[in-house]
Image (tube, rainbow, N blue to C red):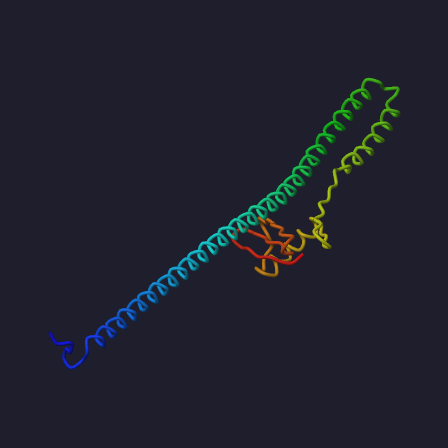
Length: 203
């Protein structure tokens, strides 16, 4: 058998085959490395996405906590205003009761006047002094004041109510009819609702 195949020696063909095999193995190794690099990049991206998702969840939780804290603050402000109105109502109820008691005592004294003709003039003097003292008892009503302090700011409930009434008048050109106030000290604003109209102002 001849050592030459198609004009080339067998040794040259073998060396060419070896070189081709080496090149293919190098290409395969490079391809494996490229696949590994791609997989590592994908893993890194997955880790980043997971970290972003965790951060987003944490941000949502923080926002939910802030919203809950704001709701509690508004509820506390509403409770304060409710307690104020209740105290004023109690004071108003007590004043008429004192009036009725004063009238009963006057009636009893007038009856005693009719029975005792001799002491009529003296009893008249007593009833007039009692009648003069009754209005003083009427004037003794409970006075309360709510003051909101936040940081370096301070405002009381009367000033807030006046500012809200002025805001409704300026914004809608009418007097307030059913006014509700929501104070947000962290924003430095007061939000109001009057019927279907809403607005806000700084305090």
